[in-house]
Image 1 (cartoon, helix red, strand yellow):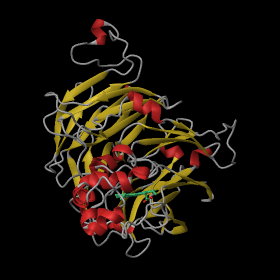
Image 2: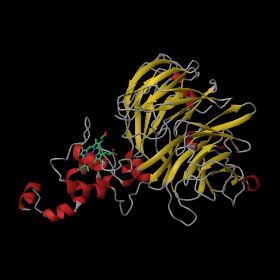
Image 3: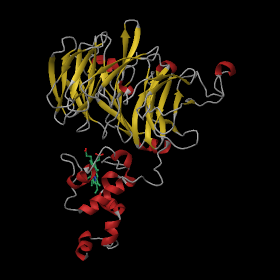
Image 4: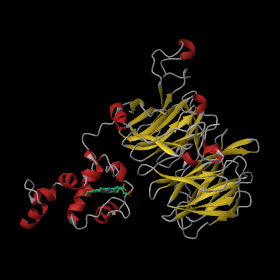
Length: 504
Ligand code: HEC
């Protein structure tokens, strides 16, 4: 006991207080890198919302062993097992009161890149609409690929732990990348330089850019808000606390863009409702009390008026159809889904989809006269094909396992689906878009997870990730389905082609 006291070198803390007070251990050993209130600094935020992905003893193991090739040190010789356990439990305890992150904090977080120099035109000669980004998660980087030669034009650092899809400005010049801790990085692809970054939330889910490239909407888990930023200078424009009818707060699971309605549509995690936030000059709906067609334009000057649609059951993951009118939502209990018509603000159909369809990653195309949508299921080895007029499930295709992502291209006859879970995680299955039969199963690297497909802008090539620390992006001829190239990458997750991803 006495030796421990001396070695801790602290006159104020007794050994027992120290063992019992993980907050003090945090202040002593972690605060310099992980920040006051565990909100992050040079290291990531350490909050229950962010640590969920460290399962089992992964949190303790990280503290004990540190992270190789990063600034996260090993605490093996500094903290004993009990201290590490207590510290871990402390990090997984929500803060009370919950941290505040409003307009003021967002504004103050802005970091401009002083070295950034805007350029008149791109510093490179590649086709700007065929540039493709590869998000590499193991060392928090993005590779910028020339989509014709597949050469890496540059590789840059992102904030810790990117999440969701990067968003491109309508001209393809800027890309906005969000991180788990709510940082939004603006990168100029023409100058190949970061413009700046701002923290829009403390734990964030995804972002969307308005079709005109002016506004960024951010879905936050912590705090329970959505935020709207100016895409130009990253300044906050609006922060709204999201609440259910009874006033209880709700996390925002995701934000979607309904470009034709000039609105952002929010999926909420904790309350059965869908929120729509208009950014256009003349919103088609202004709450139930005000009908602008009858009563004239919106009575107050809120540039982002809000409308809430109450639904019967939670919809936290959804697919917005190509007309931007219908929201296909899955229920988190996995017992089915519903279709909500955004124009009338009501549910219009049930979906016969069990086994947790992952609607957010669905794909649509024309099959004969019909428009269909394909969705993988997270809990069943199936891909469901839904008719987007009758909302009937036309077919369920049996896969080698549950998938996560689907992808197709208007010039491709095939739908590409990964087998994300289970023993066949190394497989990508190719489905004919007209016959709905599996025509081929690719295994880019035996035993290694293959996931997430993106096409080049012309649809001639399909890029698949080998989702491993020392992974790769494997490039296929999208017609012959033969491999044409393989680029080594550090745990490549998503790939995003500028031309395919900008709103057309
Ligand atoms: C010298 C700076 C530094 C100190 C001191 C430090 N860390 Fe870290 N820590 C980091 C960095 C940087 C990372 C990100 C590593 C990476 O890129 O994976 C990190 C990552 C972590 C992670 C993984 C988070 C995740 O979501 O993957 C945990 C957990 C963690 N630190 C806990 C602690 C604890 C607990 C302490 C104090 C006992 C501590 N760290 C002290 C810099 C530090």
